[in-house]
Length: 398
Image (cartoon, rainbow, N blue to C red; front, side, top):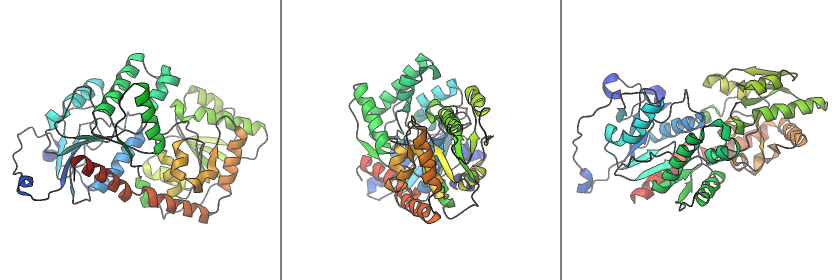
């Protein structure tokens, strides 16, 4: 991996505030790589709600770093993702951004503090400060409009002020990005509805999809255990508690079920519900290698999320030979396409969940392999990076 292979030494990872002088060979007609500054200081995986964005960013940057037509400058902080990585140019802000003050300062002033020589700024997390305005084109990946979904259906999860602030940031970002990328047609529809609702002129939104570093595990296979796996979360839209309620109902109906292994964490309600279940276990969050093995050795992955931008775990599960059961009508169906459609179920119907699991467990390794190959042909790191670079080129008129 790119970030594992290159460790920043202190002299290069610290912020360089000295003026940068360079010869502008572009004026002489020489074709040089696109210079792209990537804002990473707003990604603090140890406290962020969405780890999938950091996973996507890592995979994308690993691939972009190989391209000779691109020169990256990573702008990170002392606490953020990318702080230990480096490219030809690196800028590390000399403070942490995993608290409110540092994050606000970074979001507001990172173009002034970092001062990269760039043709374009790229924001993988999709948020622009309400006030900061770099002087070059701005491109962002906006993954979904789940924040609005939470404001509508789970208002207790944040303060009214927090919702007001972050929805304001979303509105500002959609207005000011020169180009918006998103990760599925479902996510594009979410963003378009958000614009209509808030009376924002809908920008040009390109669907680039996304990719995963799990593609490097595609040819690995593990002996299958008689269990299915769910990545447990206390986030309401992930529907872990609802899944446990459905599982309990199926058990009470006398349905023959495999063992259910939860990987992650439960809230108090989930813990109480789990105490009523048989043959259900929970494992704390795992490191990357252990998680790959846990999913790869399962007979199916249960993904009961009611809304997703992309549904990265579904792609990753098929890469390691595990079929997926997912909620019908979400972006996951778009990702796994018709070939994996047998795994869809309705959240309000326990019988449909049982049928989806039954179908998934009945899939042959050859059928699963075929779906894995199909997904790789659509969502590989190389293809994803190509789509992103095409967007950059379009914005710059190249």
